[in-house]
Amino acid sequence: MINVGILGATGAVGQRFVHLLADHPWFCLHTLTASERSAGKRYADVVNWRLDVPFPESVGDLTISPTTADAVKDCDIVFSALPADVAQGIEEEVAAKGVGVCSNASSHRMDPDVPLVIAEVNPDHLGLIDVQHDRGRDGFIVTNPNCSTIMLTLALEPLRKFGFSSVQVATMQAISGAGFNGVAAMDIYDNVVPFIRNEEEKMATEPRKIMGSFDGSGVEMAPFLVSACCNRVPVIDGHTLSVWVDIDRPLEEVRKAFSEYAAPFSGLPTQPAKSVEYFDQPDRPQPRLDRNRGRGMTVSVGRLREGVRFTALGHNTIRGAAGASVLNAELIYMKKYL
Ligand code: A2P
Image (cartoon, rainbow, N blue to C red; front, top):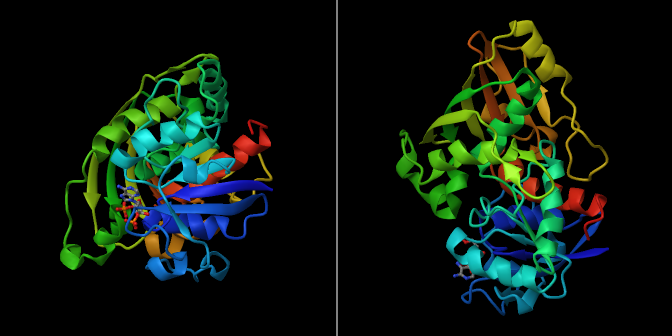
């Protein structure tokens, strides 16, 4: 078994990591960290479990460690659910100790030698791990994208073969993406907030790195443009995206590309049966009906019409965060980077 740890295990994404890793067939949950406030206490005594799945009792007795590189030095892989400002330095320290970091934090996503990976879309970018080793890092850092970027880019992947130069997207994002303060806050009930800090900037750059070409030493950004309008809406889990993409092909070909899409690998424990699932019904996908498809790992697409316009939907803290990171770690393990 591979020993794994979670940095920031008590937050919204940290809890999703705990849930996904509690009974993992390959990974053994070894270390949980949080802030000084929580360190030294039992996980069950500190965590305010807010997920729609049962608390994994097997994890409750683990003692929370402080978030230091030393605390996770016996892990093979560490998952990071830390706030970006905290993640920046600690992830580098952990990687310097020979540990592999799979991070959901944004701090290293655009570093030239750090892969920004959606397992199904750009598994070849994991080659940047070798570049990090060549530059003297004992371990490695691999990042997954922003939650809305994951839904958008995975939905675009079946259409990549057609080529496109311009993508417009309007997001309707769940409140769980704002952390637990966001979920608790009822300020958004009967409301829409047309601003999410840094979100539109991330959506403009991250898909271009993910779909960029990797030549063995670096990634060249893909040449298409993304223009995003991001909104927070009163949905608990599940981001919905309205997407416009300049593909000049018969709609039937686009429908076929969505329906026939299959991931380029199989057999990973967290992998859903379908990474992209296409709906023909005019009123799908919807968060309450479709966010848990493929145990929260499927991106649903539908409402396809001329333009090309379509709707994409995915579970933001599973497919859009912890699940994406665990899938990356499984791929790293399968490709023998550990
Ligand atoms: P804690 O629950 O002890 O505050 P947030 O929910 O604020 O985004 O935090 C996500 C996770 O990161 C939580 O586990 C939180 O622990 C942890 N965390 C937040 N700030 C720090 C910090 N300065 N140092 C270490 N861990 C932190």
